[in-house]
Image 1 (cartoon, rainbow, N blue to C red):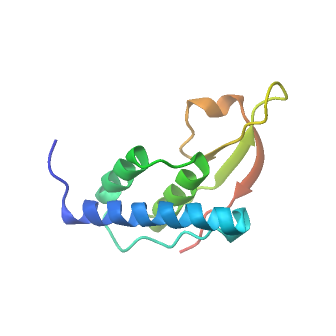
Image 2: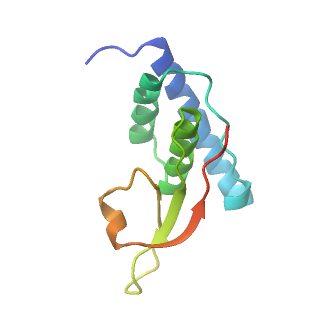
Image 3: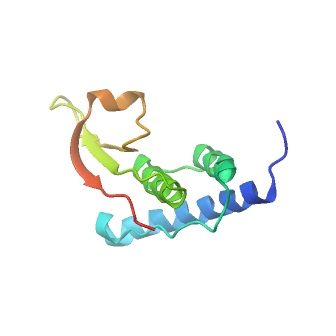
Length: 120
């Protein structure tokens, strides 16, 4: 594996700060008060730094989806954050994901809410 370049490191730093701020804003203001600032102008390959921090820093699926949504929007890929719940069986659970980046779990979830992609 090659060492990260400066752009990748800057993307990682932005992601670390964005996750921390998003966590705080969700706790203080709820879903309507969470605002993820756009990343600095960075090339698309710097996404490697974003994903490195997302994988290593503890975060919820909602925090992760909001930060990834902002990164993707800043690079021309508009995607809604989708929040869903599984069927009516068992305990209440919810999951959030980017519409164009679903994970394996989402097939069993029913959509409850969408957060539109930011317009840069």
